[in-house]
Amino acid sequence: MSHIETVSSFVEGAPPGELADVIADIKALTASTPNVVSALTPAFERYNEEQLATVKLPGSSQPVRRPLQMVAPQVKASSVQSHVIEGPQADLVKSTLKSLGAYVKEHFANAAFGVYPIESDAKIAVAIVANKYSPNNFWNGRWRSLYVFDPASGSLEGSIKVDVHYYEDGNVRLLTNKPVTMSIPSGTGAGIAKDISASEKKYQEELNRSFVKLSEGAFKGLRRQLPVTRQKIEWDKVTSYRLGQDIGGGSSKR
Image 1 (cartoon, rainbow, N blue to C red):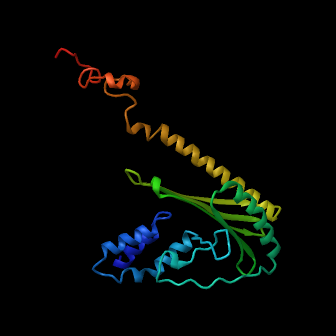
Image 2: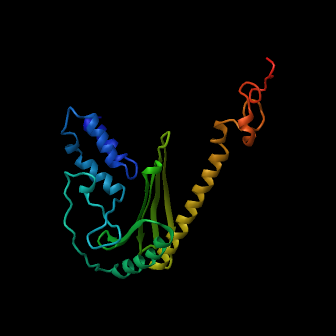
Image 3: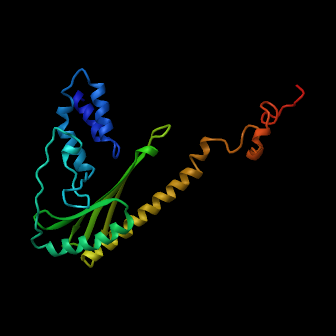
């Protein structure tokens, strides 16, 4: 693996909301070769595409596509242009957007979504991305779901990805990728949004159950339930404990 490929992997693996920090670290570590960052344009492009990067466009209150220059100053984004939805899937795209908007508004605090005709208008793609950044509390997270619906077969295929990074007094990262395959006989925008909602709700419940199992299983096994004395500490009396006596179980007349 070349030097640029190694550094590019750092960019593409950056946690949600922390790409600027990764770039700053790369600059610090490669100070003797200042042209490294300028050679990372393909990595920035792959990162933005894979992470469904979003941005608020001028005159809009909703986040949409994030321009590349927001994360890589040397990359220029194209100017904003309007696009009229036309073609055989235009009505399906519009109805799916309407139904999906109600779902996203109800379940995500800060999200962007879109429905697009693809493969010469033979299919439509549905994308949802939600970001939640809390660097002051040392955690950031991103939800991404991407689906492709085939009107001819009524099939919907895609995946749900969750990426959460905790880094207070440690470094813990959750990365998931849940494949989704289902059939939508109605073939309507309302049906697509309804089944996406049901699938994502089910997956969130699966994640919650997994967290409970980790908390009560593996994580619980990492620490003692009781101190070495095998007795619970009475915290309201902690100021009266004498080191080596009450806590250690020793005698006061040693």
